[in-house]
Amino acid sequence: MEDVVVSVEEYLPIRIDTINDNEKIDFELYTFEKERYYLFCTAFSNFRKQDLSSTYINRVGHLYVKKSDWKLYRKYVESNLSIYLSNKNMGISSKVDIIYDISTSMIKDVFTEGISSITKEQVENFSGTMTDFIFDESVKINEIVRFAEHDFYTYNHSLHVFIYSIMFAVFLGIKDKQDLHAIGEGAFLHDIGKSNIGLEIINKPGPLNPQEWNEMQNHPLYGVKIVRDNLSMNDEATLSIIMNHHERLDGKGYPRGVSKIELFDRIVGIADTYDAITSNRSYQMARNPFEALRYMIQTQSKRLDDELMRKFAIMLGSR
Image (cartoon, rainbow, N blue to C red; front, side, top):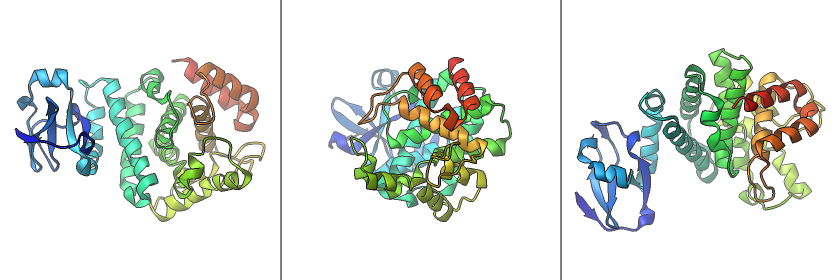
């Protein structure tokens, strides 16, 4: 192995089980031992897990890639996501960690590098694979939402809402794959319009002033335009979710103040609200699931849909 002396900040840890054994990869892999990085597998060569000692695997548990190779690694993982999710030897917690890493990285790139950093195919492949996994494998709610119960960040909020929305749709008996894929894509992209809003507003540690709030209320409009114009996605159900996830039955939502809201929009609206109030934010402490559901039923059910709210509570209570 080649000895490489570099700054720790130049490398990122990756899961060993995300690299298929004896498969050619187009990025370098490194081990980390005795405060040094060692080149383990060169780009465009076959990864051989058998060359890793069991001691290293048990003690360190990770390989490393250069930051400059991170996108190549992520592309590799995205292309293999269905393989990981169907692997009977991989535990649900490992699968969830992989899902989490991919999705948050995709959304973060959109906010830091612009919408051109992802493609329609990436969104469709990720959303479709994840939706099929939840539906086909009959994944239980408590197996997959555990990681959605922590601090709120725009990057992982989209994944949380995706999961809650798909699980809820399946719970309601929605079985058509096309419908589930539309819900998944809409949920995953529901806040994509916030990438057009300044980070000083997105990350403001406190209430927004009227001008800032008015700008924030435009994010569904921005989102529809981004998805239609930049990602060339024109599914009506998906676009409706992005446009209407903040609309309310009393007509006091935004951005248009409409009161006629489709079922899929209401599903995502409930999931979005629940995740927001069960997560720590800079200006708000998280409520526990019981307090959040009680608060939503008492104050939001008429606006969000009383019957759906109670079914959502039953779903979460079944955990």
